[in-house]
Length: 357
Image (cartoon, rainbow, N blue to C red; front, side, top):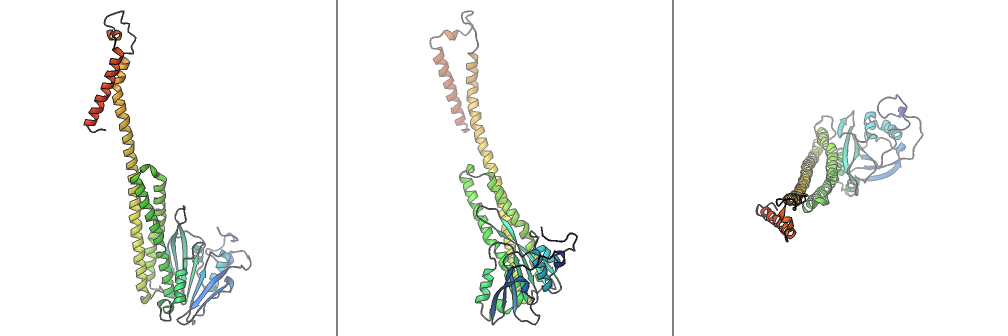
């Protein structure tokens, strides 16, 4: 929830919606380049001004962490950014989308992050692209765009990233965002394969919580990755898009990568459901084995219990010759034990012949 917001203020992130909290000490990295030169400057956010339309350099304003809403609102006013877009920036968890304004396009993507022994989470990526500038705003987390910056630093005067303007930088950042999801997906794939191997080796070594956790991670990924392809396609097809035909051919490759990611996610989701069904099937099979053993034991003891119960009746043999005369036999007790043992052996042989054990 945004602090210092005046209740009942206009929608969107506007400077007038905030109480005056004074200047902040927030800084951003401003990278300006063309085919011949490159400058990198860390400067206070309140000093960063929108480049002149006649400036042929590309200006990349790189936010390394989420700025305070009031400071972002003042920055957005100087740069002509839509307040509704800025409001989406400071409220993470937005659905991936692309919006077209007067001379600026705004894109939101979600990239997955994963830490040791932690569930998958999504990190919102916010990108603005104007005629000669690009703004990237990310929350706390890994420095996602360092490889893109390395390409700019090492790029020759004829390299695409140094010559094709802001549209190509915008594409490069989108492409890096999409590709960042593949290592996370590979990590989940390795985890799923390990779970399957352990499950087939010993079903007791895996708990149902592990399978639920895997399905949860895939659901979190799928929730935000599926709309990404539509947002990317809109950037290519929209008539006001800054993506010209020269850059569009590269953007289509990014869209293909996103389609591969979506297909892999769907396949992994089905695999996770299959693993859960396999787990339940193995647990059911184990329960059946236990019940079979208990049933065999009970079946063996039924005739034995009958005989022992029969001879447990209190009839006096002296009162009548028909009252269990075998109780007076010299070998009556050993004979009964022998009969009981014979019954047990005979039933075990019968079960063995029927292949029930």
